[in-house]
Length: 302
Ligand SMILES: NC(=O)C1=CN([C@@H]2O[C@H](COP(=O)(O)OP(=O)(O)OC[C@H]3O[C@@H](n4cnc5c(N)ncnc54)[C@H](OP(=O)(O)O)[C@@H]3O)[C@@H](O)[C@H]2O)C=CC1
Ligand SMILES: CC(C)(CO)C(=O)C(=O)O
Picture (tube, rainbow, N blue to C red):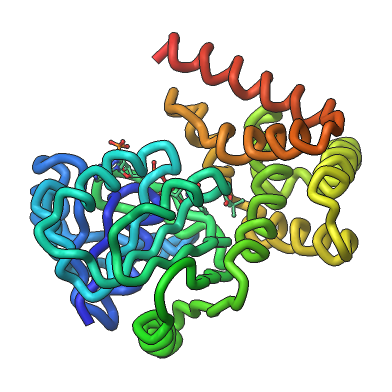
């Protein structure tokens, strides 16, 4: 099976490194220079410790993507999807299978009008960091869940079976909304708190005072989303936090690199939900503004 991956950041490099064990992978980078560097050096995967492996994959600039692979995985940030959609709508052929891996929920409305036979969404619970253009560190193993958004499931089932064989398990979920909400809750708790406190994910649990803030924020999210089984959902958040304990959240990494964060897709989504239900969201709004403020600060410095 031919797989295309768009975006050579942390998740794109991680997926490319693992999937190349079973598939013919083409990684689509933002620039030709990035593609050239990856083609020259190969792709290095660090396991978070001392082990490092190297694979060879094909890299091409995104402008060369024609949508002909059986499955294309979109691994750009939520706010970078527009440029991908623009390219999809100008392709000569309708792509067969597209899998979107973004955190947050606000990209769902964008996916409705994309011309593609089948569209899937995924939630990634692994922790990964791009070290340089051709090296990625796998900082925490977790689940990858995928669900159908539009069309039919056959290709993704076949893909999932092949992924199981290379120890990169993908779980097919029935209900995309539920799946993404679960991940949104984890990101809404973990990402802003770790980014503001500048700590790794695991410290949210080990420090009792940070943990008190985790509980307060979760309770507010639970109230806004009218969560059923809140204790089970809270345990899911703690599980992800522990599994990625040594990871810096993507929001912390974004702030440190002076990049835009995905706060609008995460807490922004919850603020809109609260407004629609005329509920107050004091913690969520405060953390939203703090991250926006930090974004403004860091981007000025960089
Ligand atoms: N990192 C992690 O541990 C986790 C991340 N996620 C989610 O996965 C998604 C991807 O995150 P992550 O990999 O960390 O983000 P990164 O910013 O590391 O990677 C995104 C990459 O896509 C590139 N890109 C942007 N636009 C285009 C384009 N038009 N064509 C080709 N490439 C493009 C970016 O280039 P440039 O930087 O030059 O703009 C960047 O290299 C996010 O939604 C994130 O929330 C989920 C779980 C864990
Ligand atoms: C799973 C987790 C919390 C890993 O850090 C993540 O999704 C992120 O950082 O965005």
